Length: 395
Image (cartoon, rainbow, N blue to C red; front, top):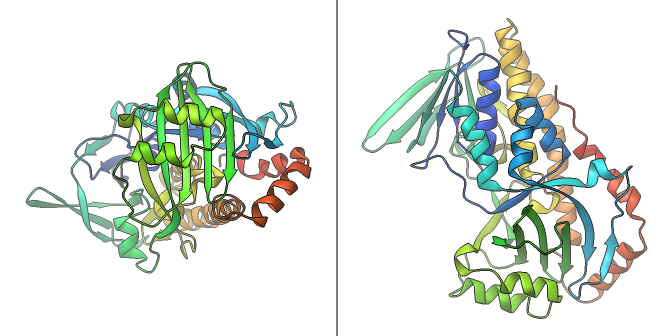
């Protein structure tokens, strides 16, 4: 049952926004979710959810539904374009908490979250809402407000809290932190989910000059693959599938097989943008920024969905629940920023570091040195270093 007078407006109906809405409702708030698109949905292919993402889903009461919608597998390691192993990660019990992942179609994750929001008491879902103005308000003072356009009409709603979950091109962030603009990473990415019941379901990442390839199973009958490569911003291929087949024509047979088996209508591509400098704060007045609106990272650390889910849990547990219990909103927002910003900024830095030795590395001697070092490095310590990200405890 939502507490009277405790209202929140969530801008954005993606993973971060819906997770935040669920968490807010669980804390007893009334929530309005504004989605710019004409319908709630998710554009994309597959993703991998690491242990911290599953922990966040468990805190929201959705982990079993997501497990059922996805495919549990492990990270197998890294190869070079010929298919030779650079680092093979052993399937050991002491590493499994870090190496275990759940392959999932992005739309299926979104569907689980959307179903939870749609059936919850105290949530209003609004589509076709283009945000045009935000007033952050002040904790203990004026309320925050969001104005959005829908057709020829403008609407404004006031709230105790605004959650900006409107992605890397956040309209809310652009108004509150105009200097923090998304930057093109220098790379673009093909993605596809294709029918496949026989390929290795483990996540295998392949590093070549200016290009990465990866594939993992997202269901018993589907494989998701990505091709991430250096390319001019906004470039267009007349034949996307033909360009993908050409790029990987000399790579390992298993890679060529997956790309060749991809129907043209299953292939999507998007330029990759991020926020390498981050934000000076994740809060402003009564507004809290979450997901890519706050900390868009390169995909190389595989943490976009997981950190969005973490943010959603923390909005409810660190802000909404303490305020409903009589706590101070300013103190709750400050605590959220103090805890979330260092962690998320470290993940952004980690993703950038991985890109420097991966997709950003050109050909020649750099490839040979990197590959030799990976072949010589013991995998155990490298995997355990990832435990700082994957082993996350909700507040």
